[in-house]
Length: 513
Image (cartoon, rainbow, N blue to C red):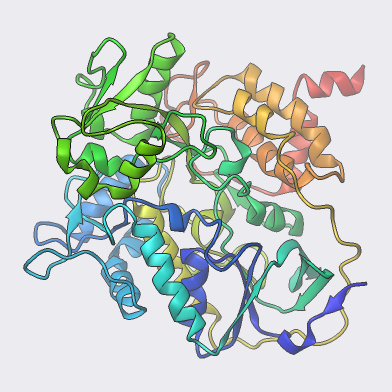
């Protein structure tokens, strides 16, 4: 039996409790909202694992124009310049809003914000908290603010399974709980569910994050955008730990060098060297590993005994693997870190479905283009969470009446999908691998088993990748190594992607045999 939570009817429902979700709820207050989270509030979120911080042009030598230029360069021709300019311009206001909510950013002896440097930034503009534990510090402060806000209800242990539609309008959210199925009747849903790292074996994200928000939106009929662009962080700690521990780009920003097993600094002749855009560094490291080599981060001269003080979390993670960064080389490898694609939204977080907003990594706003500039992710999460809340605020709410969502779908399990995606949709791609992924994923995506939702998200990545016959940003194809002279962002619905997949060899050949 499905329980209808009538006492919460009509409230804005926010799915996810990372930075985007928490900022949406806090900005909406005193208007009532409900945060739905599968785990404990703030747990299993990529936001809490972020090490670097938030990119914001607040330094005396910096400006929004310089920040925008770096963002557009990293985005490799596919950023939406107007969207990017607007989000970047709101960075100082986002920092102020976070501080007002209780976040304590690191400051120097003069009382000014302490600013770090990361790859592809031409200025020090990374605002951080508690050194390299920025994400955890930010989320902890926002959780305290949420718990003190009477207008915000929190439903922990609620897993969103389907968006309930009334025609083309959002009508509610179907959730799985410890007591069975429950429906939250609402005409306003905000998806802030994070990324897709759990589709891959090598990731720095929570393994349970397979793109739930994308699957929910896709099944409901929302348009998706730029799904092929999956960013691999160049320097995850190469160990047996899953998910892999992240070695922040800020370590290279402090002067650490990349070397191979022969001691060669293989990035030295590449523009930007160790601080080149992430896709460039990830491909270079992948090439070293593909030839049978190994790659290390050398922080001994740049930081030495100062490493533990500057990067206490990373130092601890290295210690768990038996590595002392002050004296030892740190073994690294690329790992999935961020997804530039997602649910297509406008400047206020609105999707193509009336009543559905998306904020944070689950959305594709156009800020990141083909490759995210380091630490623009938390900036986007904060700004777009606030924008979505402002867009929703004051809108007529509805949630009364009888709604039906059918039976509760099966729980999700990405274990069947993960090896397919890891093998075929990695740093370097080609038609054979992409088509192989489609052939393996389509039957799972069309089924009703536990792998269906993860397979839908993975299939979308593969179909979008099959259509982009060039190498650009985080999408690198060995069979199409050059960029097209003119390239555009792409949007598609799940129904369209399924039709393309069914017509793609070898699956189409197998169906006709």
